[in-house]
Image (cartoon, rainbow, N blue to C red; front, side, top):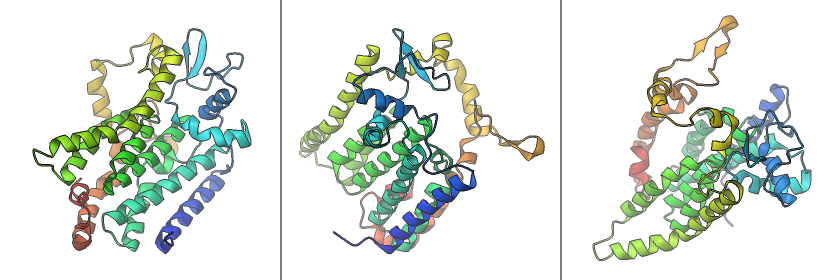
Length: 331
């Protein structure tokens, strides 16, 4: 095994100290269990051999789907699989905050590896990995073990692993990790056509080689398809619909339409133009039910394009080693 680079070790230690201080300064504990950790609840039910959540318990603060008079977790299921070893050790009191922090620290390490693959030297890779934690919404999303944060942080880790495999030209594991990410956030499925296009662009096959590429792609997608079949079987067993994760059966969506074109203009105006406002006592008005312009929550969007171009220009000789580097530098 190759000895870990000192810059990577320093990066991971920095992230670990960040989370330790974050929870301590906020008056909490890195080892605390989140009361909104529905995934631990689901993992406990799976451990007992049941798919639903006991209705005898009252979980009014959790987003639970109601179907055929039974209660189910309304979020995609994959994080519960990752929690099964933790549940076996800690039972219902899993250290949710620690688990999410570990996902984020691992994400930082994987991003560092991605930057090294595209040719950045050790110090530069370590420096440009830090904005993932301090310059994006991951800084907040990874600060809690709640169900929403747990799924999003694990999704970030799995997508980064898939991108690392993509950069290394490894089709089968790239699609496999991407399929796992879909089990945290279903919208991640949009990455599949992008990955296929990038694998094609890496080495465009000749007309005679197109069949060979398609055949290789078919076999590379088999592990991802098996993961998808697992999701569909679980959805079918719970909601009689292979494409339903449970969100449609949340009480608020049974009373009001879930999707409608009428929402589009209003939501886009919020996403693109709503400012971040200050209220009385200089308290930030976060508009928790509607939000504000996405780039205000993720300052990395404002500076990353320019910074990446400068960084790539200074490392041109190394970036040529990766066939995907031009695509990432112009993103």
